[in-house]
Length: 68
Image 1 (cartoon, rainbow, N blue to C red):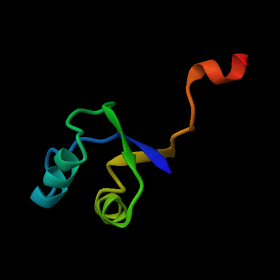
Image 2 (image 1 turned 135 degrees about the horizontal axis):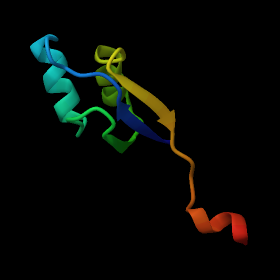
Image 3 (image 1 turned 90 degrees about the horizontal axis):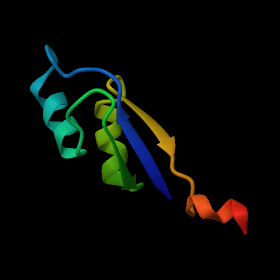
Image 4 (image 1 turned 45 degrees about the horizontal axis):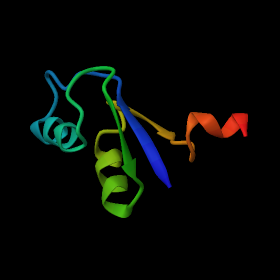
């Protein structure tokens, strides 16, 4: 399963470990998002910064699937 992670809040004024975790997720600005494969290590990182990000399940398949 893949998940889309979107940064919703800034890391300014936060703990250094939160800033480093957000950067390791591939995020850096509010509104930026990345798709990651869900696994236990990702779950731990998301638990650490759950107040800074939004997590959504990524739909499988492309946009062209609906036309077929």
